[in-house]
Image (tube, rainbow, N blue to C red; front, side, top):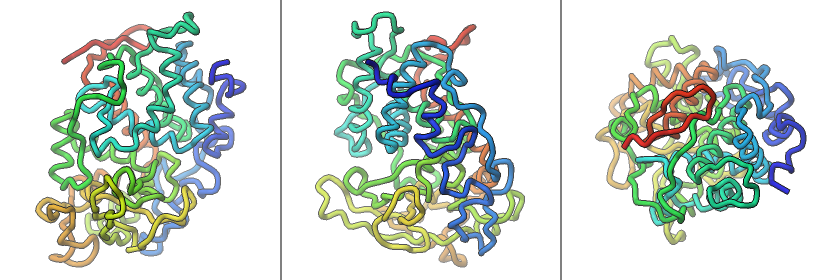
Length: 404
C-alpha cells in the first residue's frame, strides 16, 4: 500500500490537520492568526499593529484539495506521499523547502554535497524522501502505471508541497515543470557549490543572488521570507536557534519581516520603519560541537539562552547577519568572525546604517502577507527551475529543457 493511502479522502482535511488549520482557514490555531501581527510581539513601541493590510486579517484559504493545486495523477500521488511524511514529522516541511533551494544552486539536479558545512542536516529530508523517489523513479517497477519523475523532480515537488501547506493554502504552489535531470545515482555526493553565507553583508547578499540566480533586490528580499519556517541547531549550522526566526516557525508568513521592520504602515518614513524591536548580537560558543564553528547571532531583545519551544512563542528568536542585512547596511561593519561593530538600535554612529532600499521592500511585506506569499511563490518557483528552460505547454506539468 502506497504512502498516500495514509491520507484519507481528497487530502484537504489532512493538510489542515497537519498544521492545525480549520477547514478554509489559512492560519494555524493557537497563534492568533495574523490579525494585527504577532500578539505576543509588542515591539512596535507597544502599538501592536504590525499586521495591517491585506495580509493582516485572518480568513478563508483558497481551497485545500490537492486537485486544486495539480491535476496530473502522478503528481497528485507523489504529493500525497509527501504530505503523509509531513504528517508524521511536521518539521520536515521546512527541511523540504531548504533542500529544494540547496539542490538548485547552479542547477536543480537531485544532488547535494553533504561534506559541505552549509548542507549539514540535509540528510534528514533526503532520507525521508527516499521511498517516494524509489516509487516514482525511472527504475521503479513496483507500480509501472505511474509516470516517471526524477529525484530532482521529487525534491522540487516536496519543496512546493511544503510551502503550500505551510502557507495555509492561501497561495498555491503547483508543480508546473518536470524533467529535471539527476546528476547521478548518489544523492549525497553532488558537486561542491558555493551557498550564500550566514555572515554576508548587505552588498554580498544581493550580489550573490544577482550573480547566481539573476534576482533583483525585491526578489531576494521576498525569498529570504522563507526563513519564517524552520529552526537552526548548533550541530548543523553552529547557530543556537531551536525556535527559528519567528515565533510560529511552522507557518510561512510575513512574520519574518515583522521582526525586523518597525512602523505602523508601509508609508511611514524611513526612521519609523527602522524603529523595529531591539536585536542584540551574541556569541555562540561551539567548542563542544565537533563540526560547527563559533558563531555570532542576533537575538530578540538580547534574550539569551536556548529556545524552549517550537511554534509557541517561548523560545529565543534569532536572526543571522544576512537577515539583519536587509534592514541594516552591514557592509564594512562585520569582522572576519561575523561580529558586528555596530548595534541594531540607537543613534548614529553606534547604530548600523539603515539599508534604505531593501528596508522599504521588507516593509511592503510586513504590512501585506498576501503580497509576500505571492512574491515568494513567484521567486521560489524560479529557484526550482534553475538551470533549465521553461517552455509553455497546454497542460502542466510542462517538460523542462536544459538551458546550460
